[in-house]
Image (tube, rainbow, N blue to C red; front, side, top):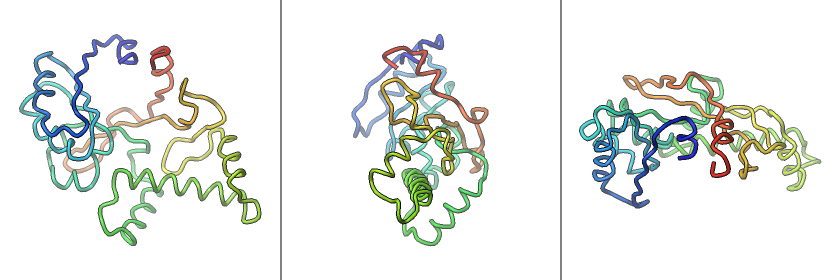
Length: 212
């Protein structure tokens, strides 16, 4: 809310239960306010419900949801309805060799869809491997791994923006070492950039003040 207000936006919030199953009241309230954009901070089964209801209840606004809503099983269920939403991503939206490697691993080892948290887990695993490789077999200890990570500055981040843990980029969140994001949407089943590349979220949070 502080970040939006700093940008000159009028922000109205509407709480809902974390495990809520009925999003009609939330979207109806958004429609009644005349909102131009609606951000629904929910995931999993909520993605399907919100995206199905949104075009009918709030037809004149843009819907934003978390990147977890792009999970393969959700996209398969919704089909063309995925086109109604813009989502966030910690990685680039264009094809990369890292994405090809990830997909090859999924095709070989996964028994269920591995989108959403699977991409984040794989990125973290490969970043850990990079630290282990640099330390070498004789230098690997828990302390050495932590020290190397904490000393990082614009270190290559597998399938993501370079990370820096040696500086506090976001006040109050010293462990958030790569907060930069991209935005994307689906157009006829294909991922399309929706935000002009990497977005540096740090100034947005800094300008929002202590609450940010």
